[in-house]
Image (cartoon, rainbow, N blue to C red; front, side, top):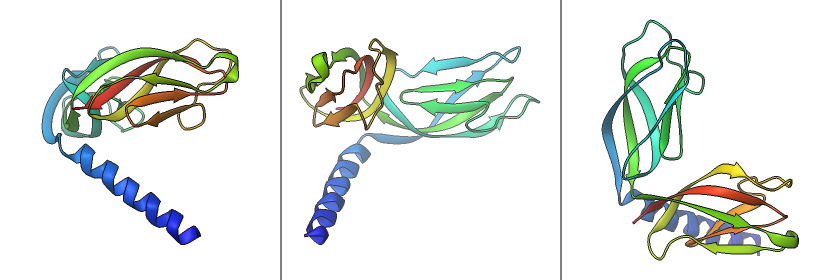
Length: 162
């Protein structure tokens, strides 16, 4: 029985991976600069999610260290601590939507977010509940829906590959 479950999981992962790769584009160049050591982020238009980022050409004397002074989150990239650079990105093209989904009385709530495409990124923008909203524990993706449980109420940014 365990072998069947593992095989089904692998097939599902392969199917999801295949649909995501269709609109993947690499070699996108973006210049982003942190002046006076300040945090700066940039939304990328028509981008559902950034899958990778690397420094193509550093412009600052301050170091650009992934996860510390630059990085990515969903459809956004950011710089901090004086990092200035031209970055090379791999992205999945698509659209961004925001919505609120709330689990009332600890009940499971399904929120429809798209009519077509594939959800490729989910980011919690604001938590409205006293109960934690954690992706994979109280917020899940199910097809074209966001599902919240355990009293979670949040504003969510969703990247959709259409």
